[in-house]
Amino acid sequence: MPPLFAGFLVFYTSAAVLVLEILAGRVLAPYVGQSLETFTGIIGTVLAGIALGSWYGGRVADRVDPRQLLGPMVLGGGAITLFTLPLVRLFGAGMQGGGVAAILILSVVGFFAPAAVLSAVNPTVVKLQLASLAETGQTVGRYSALSTVGALVGTFVTGFVLVAALPSQPIILAVGGSLVALGVGLWLRLRPARVGSPTAMLAVAAVAGALTLAVQSPCDLESAYFCARVETDPANASGRILMLDTLRHSYVDLDDPAHLEFSYTQMLADALGTLEPGQPLDTLHIGGGGFSMPRYLAATRPGGDNLVLELDPTLLQISRDELGLETGDGLRVDVGDARLSLARQPARRWDAVIGDAFGGLAVPWHLTTAEFVEEIQATLRPDGLYLINVIDYDELGFARAEAATLAAVFEHVAVMAEPDHFAPGDERGGNHVMVASDAPIDLAGIERSIADRGGAEVVLSGAELDAWIGDAQVLTDDFAPVDQLLTPA
Image (cartoon, rainbow, N blue to C red; front, side):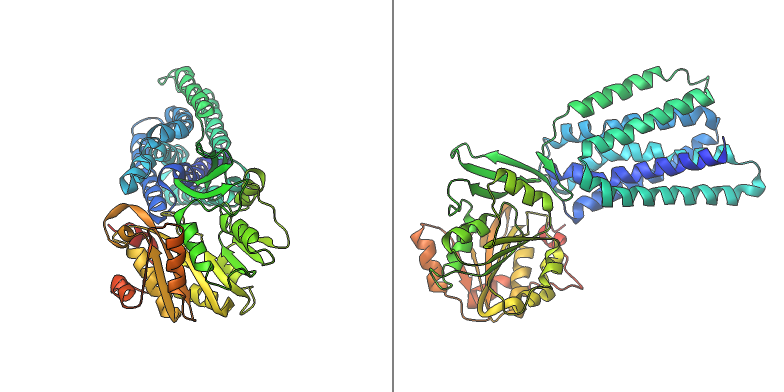
């Protein structure tokens, strides 16, 4: 085999493995969400496949003529790649929210086999290209380097370009289809007589490609960060529910922007109602989602300024196209990472800052730390409120740590939730709306608002809140193990 083509073969198959690894987070997100655990499971599974493929590929290449292996190997890797989406969606439908076990099972089902088969190409090519023992180090080093460069290119192109430009389906079809074509070409060029014709394996690849085309995506749109879809509320013709990955993230009533469906948004409104009732509020929103709270404040407190820091431009487009969002002077959107955008905010600018960027297990940890909270504090007016919605499960380690972090920065902190959500052991999880300020919080006003709307939530503050927080750690930029606190081993 010409050295240039051999190098390309190693480069391309290694790049394909990393394309699949980067896409895996996106493919698994509708079933298990996106968290550190998700990416840990994916990376570990793909590395295990690479290790097995490299070891076993070299072992087989020592026993069988590599020219008989390469065509079937690349063609088979392409066919297995094309099975990725159908298999994940078949198994994933019954494993939503299944935790670590579901992450590992779906990672293995979808990505272990293609990683193993394609990683066997490198040692097979090395065996084929070795001319003498005197060149062993040079040959192994060259193809190892090309394999690494291919992996780097696959990583960068997928993460920076492909994921933002295309859904998962056409990317996987392109990768799998190109590998199938490359494998057929190798098969015909090297003519592995003992292996026979590629017809049967081509038929398998064709079936896999047809299934990939036919399988229905759980997303209306795939962004670089979420699998998103909008559902109509069967009980309300004008109600729309924004689903992000596994979470019912936002509810919007197209006919009534003042309608707040979810309990956590009602709690946010209870706290906001204690700030200059009836007057316009200048509010900074960290996270837009379906833009429920910005729309609510624009409708109920006209004349105020609402600036939304939203990471995902696709969510902004969905809200405009399907959720009736209209931006303008009173409701503006700054697309980008909230931590970076916050640094550009002037001091003492906002009456309130609302943190609604956490979604189930998908929590951007850098928006939880004391350093970030201090930046929030600097943008608030002296009597301003920082309100944050936290969802936590089981032992409530994250919720208690976030409350401890707020208490380390602000003079006054209160937490609202249903009584059951203050007790550990609820695997379903629950919302905790936290309120922080350097001025005394109108707890009585919040409790009256909860009672007036018939809510069941209670408010913890003072000694009761201290007891609930207990010895929870303060989260910092240096140490914020949010994923582990959310799902302790």
